[in-house]
Image 1 (cartoon, helix red, strand yellow):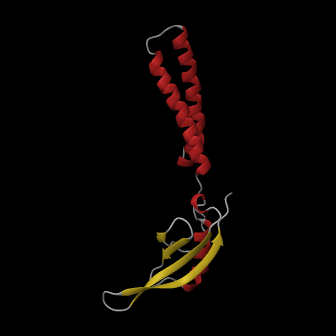
Image 2: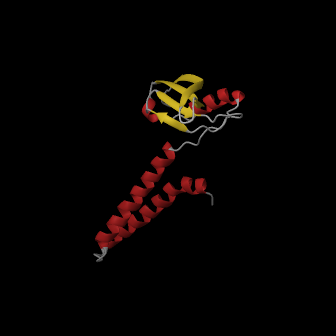
Image 3: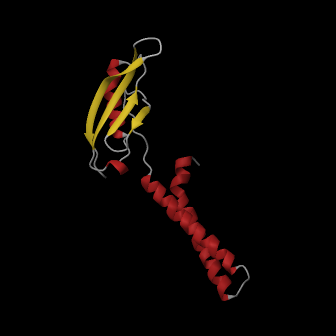
Amino acid sequence: MSFFELLENTPKIFGFLGIVLLMGTLIAFIFNFGFKFRIIGATIFSLLLSLSSWAFIQSYSENVVIEGAKYLPIVYDNGFDLVIAKAEEDFPQDSIQPSLEQLQENLRKGSRAGANVKIKIRKLEKISNDVSKPVIIGEAQTTVKMN
């Protein structure tokens, strides 16, 4: 079973376990077993795990990959309206636009609702031995909307 299959099945597994433990809890209270208070904790915990894993699945989204785009590490993100990614010195000119589109698609939507986000790709241009300056080689602007 792959990780994503397991991820999809965990709410069902923990939910089923919680229901079984709930029935065991009811039986323990009816017959006054000594472990009745311990089984309450296990029941609540398994139902909480079921709910938490369901919430995680709802929030999980895979990264979009666009053909021709190169991976660019994000070096600055203020969490709202500015994202700066770093390109290497030998970054190909024809990969700038697809890389900008890929960065736009992979923005985290939650904290940027309604923001007009600028995405910049920059590389460092060497001025002297120990000094370099940032040069913007690509820029895009997008408005992030909540789904």
